[in-house]
Length: 106
Image (cartoon, rainbow, N blue to C red; front, side, top):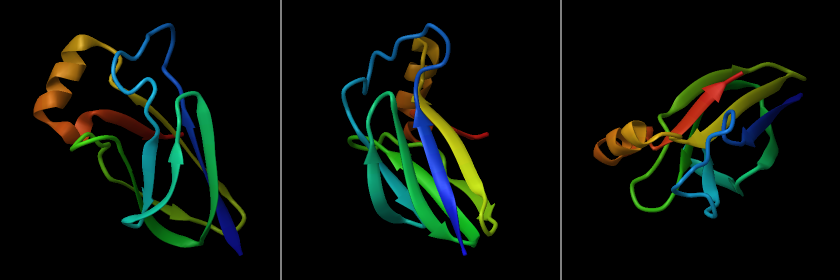
């Protein structure tokens, strides 16, 4: 059987992303690009059961941390992502590009 991976990209609350608001991001599943996700979009793909890694990348070195998860048969694994919403976090992300994209499992 397979599992569904669902990623929602939207800014939390009333915040507005200053960077990457018109850029689609690459979805890397187990270090292989499986698609792209645009702002205010939901990305879905099927994947086999078992352990996996997930990372999103933008332009240059901007990316999310690597997230690991285990997919079980017939389940839906959900993540939410967005760029850093406030200036102090964006400045931190410039120094640590692996924190540019927030990626959290629901």
